[in-house]
Length: 407
Ligand SMILES: [Zn+2]
Image 1 (cartoon, rainbow, N blue to C red):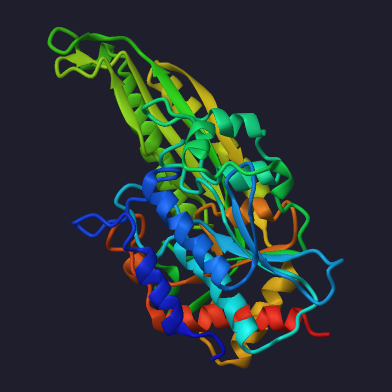
Image 2: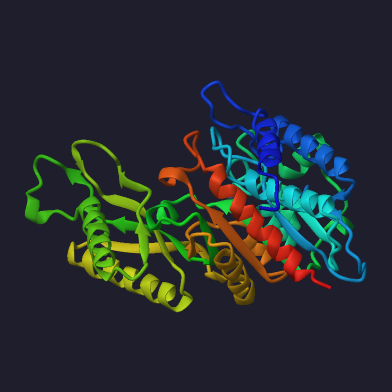
């Protein structure tokens, strides 16, 4: 192995002292004092490696090692240092530390590379404090306007712009790196698939798309006692029948479609009143855009049929639609080949969760590498990945960088 796992582990331990609660969870919500502390440590490491460092108006921090040909665009490797409340130690951090480790190994081995190679930490990936995940990479790739990001506020009313200024990380717009050769992100899988398949590395070929809807059902509220069952227009029961029907149908399809009803509410939410209204959320996911659109249409048709049959009416609000992302196929193939050359047990997978690489893929060819999450746990203190898996995964990225830069 080329990279130094122990060095990476030391950085990991040092970084995760910041924001660790007594219970063991990590609290580094975006642009809080603990996030600032992590950023300062990251900056110190960038300086130690003598990298060209800068941060932009979105608070993204970059450290770049120049290449032999300074007319070429940089290759960036990175992820995020922010966390959810009481989150895990590996999420995001590993991707940033991968960038540092790859660059330090290039230096140590005195590898001359044509392209500049840089590491990046993105602002507010989690969306836990300011409610749009992957905000800064989204603005960077023109998915959202900067104003939308700046005006996002936490529950105290503090905005991203104020907090960027407060912690001293509002840089200049000209410092953004949007013209790049390639983007790579190493991340924990956050699910159980790799572990189940006995794979130690995941080569990620894309990210599945998602459709979010809120469904409102309208029935008639009546007293639970005097109203015979057959006369009722129970909006709660209608919603439940629709949810169960969709759930069973999708389960039966077994084609990679995922549906989740994460929020369910009856109105007026009282023990002795037949629900006159109800609301539920519908989250549909699939890696293929045509299938996702079709499933969305079919779900809404099912909802219509069942709710009408129950004597109720309904409407829906589309909250979000994110088309699936395909990562750059040649990069996927090259990374797979490196795994085979090293006899690493790998599996090519599609990510179930969104990541900064999804937005960066709009700016440049991108790809991701996953390491298994033990028991699929993530976003809590039980989030663990094994260093025996992390080392080889980082090394695959290092080898890819060396190979891509062959002169
Ligand atoms: Zn993450």
